[in-house]
Image 1: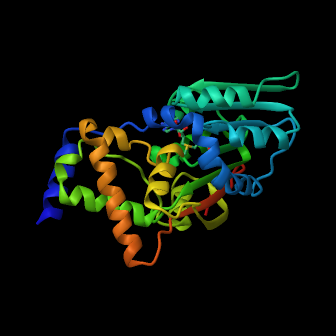
Image 2: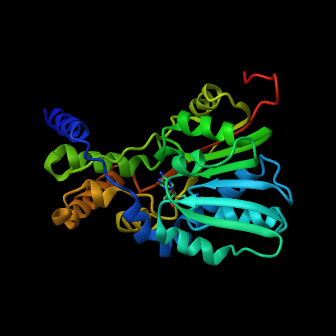
Length: 295
Ligand SMILES: C[S@@+](CC[C@H](N)C(=O)[O-])C[C@H]1O[C@@H](n2cnc3c(N)ncnc32)[C@H](O)[C@@H]1O
């Protein structure tokens, strides 16, 4: 019965277009993002880059660059020669990226504040050698975004996507769901994200967009948190809970956090400890050369 009440509430919010905006939370998390998210997950972002061929002199587009961790890693691989066009919606995240990667004599780098889909629409056909999107395709309509990526890539140009898997941080998601099932009125907005179930789902998005898949991989990382308090701190300061503040009744934020903490503690007690695992997928593809169609 209570699950039904939550479903009805979610449906009402969806019908009235009450979507939670994650960008305020990214702005708020920006100062801590590298110390929390990048420190733990950054190694996997960089491994994803190993699957494509980034070289000096190339033209690279980076979608949702955040604090510029991948921008910096790519600049190094390009030996600070070439063009990087990066975009992100969060001014807080961009401020850190701009400090990290500065234009130089041979590196033409620009950071634009805006929506990645709109940004792509303004880019010319067939000019980019590489397009990268780290941990953010979930915020777009994936096939539509990938179609634009295919358009801006030169024939033979490569795209790399790394994204959280739908089953990531399962114990936290279960606790949060339980809190909303117990009291659906706490939910005031919907966090809209298309997290893939596995790499094959992303590979199908690529095929539908006319891109040829060149690599699929999956991985996981156990987060360095063992207590409910540490788990809540990690998800808030890493940006992993982006959209959360906008999805709940702000006057009751502390109440929600306490309830989630208690639900996590209950789970930890029944499973002999708390463990949060961040699962993810990496998929790369290539834009077909003339006359070649994607499989
Ligand atoms: C998890 S962070 C990833 C940042 C970076 N790519 C990295 O690897 O660390 C997600 C980023 O997506 C950005 N974002 C979310 N929706 C966006 C959109 N529609 N257009 C551009 N950026 C967006 C957020 O501001 C945030 O910086």
